[in-house]
Length: 202
Image (cartoon, rainbow, N blue to C red; front, side):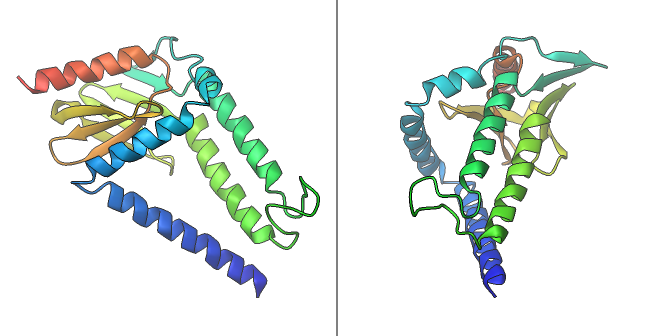
């Protein structure tokens, strides 16, 4: 069954991705992560315009509600992500030939396209609803599954800037969390995090 084989391919790719994420998050892999960061930054050097678009809205003040500081994904990042995902799905439309005799997915590759649409929907929902919240000493970070995880800022030990896309935060209990840099009140967020790190070292 061709449909079943396509689904198996999708599952294999997802499994490989999960294994890579697990391995790269292990202690002692910092050198590998930094090497990947440098590679990603070199690749992103030609995407200056996209980064400028994603940065639109980062100077906007963070929201305040019931004692919570709320940093939402910038309007620029939301717009950019929506356009890029839409273009990618259009290019992947089964059977579509963007050059004569060549298509990314064959006309019988609908299961693969459906899987791509599912991943795109999860990603867009994550970006469009992305919000970092600071409640007292807790940093609330969203996940891809529309839940939030709390991290105690009193245990924050260091911040690693990947140079392009994210901040990596490290905590005393060994946990590591990645947050988007393109959020409202971005400068204030970084300053607040650095202040906690300084205080925690005293």
